[in-house]
Amino acid sequence: MHLTNYSINRLSKNYTPNEDFASCEGHKWTLRTLFHYLKTERSVDTDVLWDSLKDLVIKTIISGEASISSLTKANITSRYNCYELFGIDVLLDEDLKPWLLEVNISPSLHSASPLDIHVKGPLVSTVLNIAQFQVPSKTNLDMLSKEKPNKLAGLPYDSRLYTVYLSKEERDKHIIYTNMDDRDLYLRDILSTLTPDDVRHLIQAEDELTQTGDMERVFPTNETHKYLGFLAGPRYYNRLFDAWEERYAANREPGIELLRKLCAIGYHLEAPAVPLQVTVTRRVQLWRPLQLWQLLQLRHLLQPLQLWQLWQLWPPLQLLLALLSLCLARLW
Image 1 (cartoon, rainbow, N blue to C red):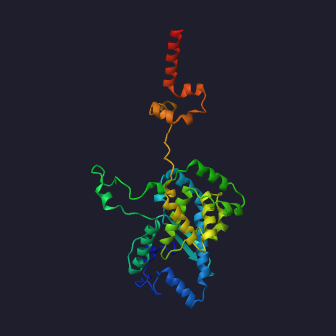
Image 2: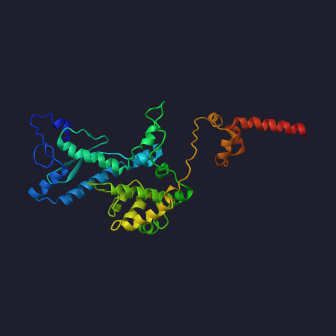
Image 3: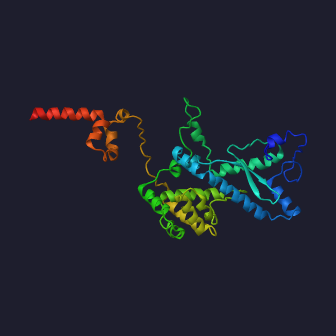
């Protein structure tokens, strides 16, 4: 049995419920109440304890970051839905050192007491605000399809803000700054010329920061660059935010003003077109779904191919060349 598992502990005959979220009684306390008790009754430096808890949370997420990142890239086509609420169970030993028990990917949000409502109500509200969840307007609701009553015909936001696709210039910048070995180099230059993709990420991060309420953003900050070495490898956005926090953490207004000016001219909406998706499972399937005009659009895919490869990959071309040869033979 996990010591933090309330659904089991509440079944014990010795369990004492706590209806008052501010009282130090019963078997279920809020974190604020616990910290107040430790500070006033046990003379514990709760700031140090909080820092150790943040350290544990950051390292926990980093341990799964490589898998999360690869799965996100493989399955996500819009950053609008890239949010997750984890429940992290922690045990404090006699020296108040935190130990990770488990991570719940679907923590319980059921509220069975006033204490639960006090904690989980603001939690849900703040999470939705941080995620910038946008409720569809009445106009959008009127556009519900009769055939698919749960399908909205329109989106309540501009999809360009959340695109995952990059222009060639943006891809080139990613390559350059990901391969830099010296932190001082990318801190100095990565913000000198912001791309539209940079601006989209930065304005989203700043918007999230305004909605944190009683929550605290623990990563990235101007002190979390020390964790970058624990990651599977350098990532462009980690370095972008490292530089941003290094420059603007103490005074965010100049950075926000810069973003405002760029957004005023629509710079953040300059997004590349969504690339055409072509899936090939067998050679014979390559030509069947494609019309000639589509093939011309995909001519860059065919440029590296030799004539003998085209002969194998596109049977209609084989027939066309045979007919052309026959016509030329008759003319001669």
